[in-house]
Image (cartoon, rainbow, N blue to C red; front, top):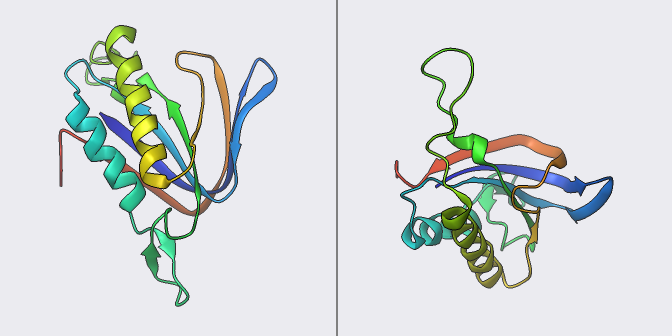
Length: 150
């Protein structure tokens, strides 16, 4: 699994001209799922999301997590995080998981985040055409891949 985390002042997802989800201060998390991803990948990444100390403390040092600031989470599925661009100019998405694998892992990831955050997370709609808006705070943007645990 790959995630792209953006620290935001606010973020929203619009589908068919209607706001599906929106948050204030917190994290927008784009999620890409591969065919060989597992619950272990999902659990590890969920722990990383809620534990990352990327919010400023009283001294202006990034030392607080989304839990510490009572922030919110917006989770959006994004298969294009697994784009392969080695050959040519048209990305291949062959590594992105099919719905039967991706949907249960996405739902598990969101549920795990809700439990660890202590409140409901906001989500987009899997496989929908979504318009995602955000005000990136910092900007702080972090990429994490469960297959490359650096």
